[in-house]
Image (cartoon, rainbow, N blue to C red; front, side, top):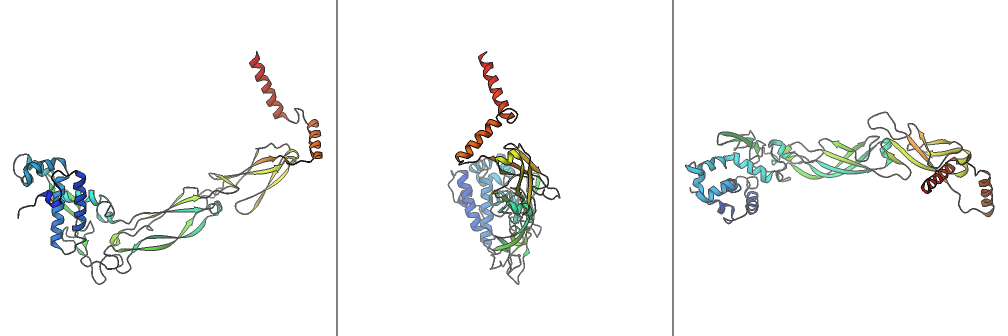
Length: 380
């Protein structure tokens, strides 16, 4: 039986662009794929014919040879055509290259074949936690829409009462071999996609995929000490693979929400505590909360300056997967009194007159002394 013109097989003009060829091939390949037409020898033949045609026309050199010599260029006849034929499409090896290139993403994976090509997809879940939850750790229940093994066929993809059968193309090996010039190349079987088996009677519940959409409830253990951006991997909790292939994984990405009182720096915590001007001058104590619900007292020595920090060891965040703890740093902010009465202002002026020397205010006196020296240097 004479072969049909390759351009006619793909339904494109002879001057079609590579993009037009690819688009035409993909549409027809999906239409005539054996999985969509089980038990239809005509569809199977058209599918093989499509792959042979596209295998020649997708490459610039083999397409040029075909345009010049037609099918004779690839039938082993002499001249440049025979050489081009040996370097171009040859049996199922060439088909597998095309199929992997065109449908690697469509069928759930790229090259590499076997059950891995039908491996379930990984999933991502974004979770917000409070700083208190990151401090203490927590078990959180989540619900995710995903694919799970079909309950009717138990993931096999075959209608209950029937079983998958060995693939007639690869004999159940999941791989086929083809001769390309001097080399023997092994590729994933195009008929069963590396499964080694095909399904004559697909499950009506899942359409032969062996999986179905469902919302799944999971318990997630958030360990104490997690930081913003921490990733938790739940192996095997991603989407189910096609026809009992291994499932993917679930990755949970944590975002620690800002806190109203504390700021976090790795394992350490920082907070600001306002104190009275008199407390800063005379000394005293200030009470601050801890993330575990307890309270800590900080002794403020007399003469404390604004911005001074006090360190509370072991009062910070837990270190992930460790018994260590960070520290808590308290930065005091001296609060200046507002809305003073006339009498209060007079008392402060008297206080200023009594304490306005360098002994009581060494920082301000030192600063203005340096300013004076700076301007004296400029005038010299």
